Amino acid sequence: MKKTLLPLLLAALVLAHGTAGAWGFFGHRTITQVAVYELPVSMQAFYYRHMAELVRQSTAPDERRNSDPTEAPKHFIDIDHYSEDNPFGKMPRQYEKAVTKFTADTLQKYGTVPWVILETKDKLTEAFRQRDTVGIITYSAELSHYMGDAYVPLHTTINYDGQLTDQKGLHSLWESQLPERFINDYKLFGDDAKYVKDPLAAVWGVIQESYGFLGETFDRASKIEKTMKPDVRFTFSHRYGKTTRRYSDVFADAYEKAVGGMVSYRMKMAPTMISSLWLTAWQDAGKPNLNELMHQGKPTKEEKEKLSTELAAWKRNTLSQDQLLLAQQKAKKVEVADEIKSAKDMGAAPKEVKEDEPAEPASNADTAAPAPAIDKLKVKTKGADGTEKIKQKGSTPQ
Ligand SMILES: [Zn+2]
Image 1: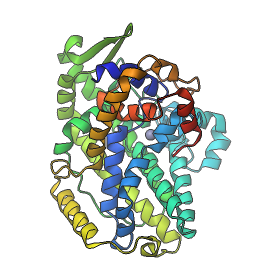
Image 2 (image 1 turned 90 degrees about the horizontal axis):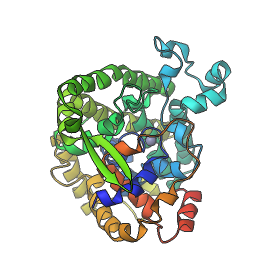
Image 3 (image 1 turned 120 degrees about the vertical axis):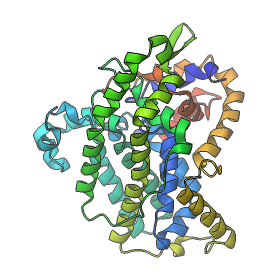
Image 4 (image 1 turned 30 degrees about the vertical axis):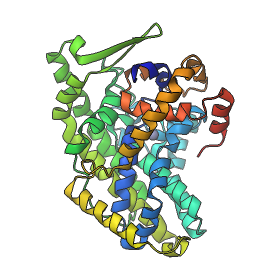
């Protein structure tokens, strides 16, 4: 089934910087879910009630990349463009100062993720002030997305897909193939949310850490490449006159042994920072009583029991084994939907590629791992009874 969906997946992915965005849908959704578990009691009931929606919306920024040409640079910062030796010493942390030094156009071209995180956090603070439930959910989800992106090393470099070092496909291998394949081994139990006194410094700290992992990200792949022939290293598919390539499962297994600890670590750290920024926004807004915003009333007994089951599984690191990860539950449903729609959509699918590609080269579509693509496909095929509907969807982002 996956193979027949390739044209659609190409259409969906060709528009993105690197792949569809850090972590793929699976990673973003899992990180968002875990962030809810790390909130203090005063915030948790509200967030837990809206958890499914938060999780779903956490991928909205990737979904609108297809329709909004201004979206792509918000997900990364190619910091090594500015200097390979000491980029963090050269780049001013504050946006205005960075613009003065490098111009807004240049910042747009090489990515703005640190400032977009701060901007989204401010929007969330304002939503808390206004007691705006919809805004709180939307901006919490988006903050989770952009902050999650910043945790991925390959979102901090011009060599974002290994394309400059003959390692094209590394991006989706790292952020999608590994977490999806090895989630059962990853420890997602992390620290509780804490107030962040200096969000700008904290966000830059995360990006600098991510950047620090790049050496290992590339080098450890190189080491495996030396011991593995290309026909073992890659999986090729031929479809519609096009050959596509991605890293094989054999390579993924070897790469997991080499860098899996790093992927797992970044995936564990991201939710703590995200829940901390949610908490910070809420506190800065004067700690509005979130229970009063729960229109259907206080948490029910059932909700409380469900939450405590999930918290226990999270602490034991068995969320995935216990089938409690929303990202995995969604994937199942989507597969069924796509199967039905894919056949009749096959012909029209490639036309869905739009011309509004980001300035960055985005040619690694052929290396995407299949699993997040299934999720992507949902986006592309949702209104697939006509291209108009798809465009319409694009103009009204979720
Ligand atoms: Zn992204």
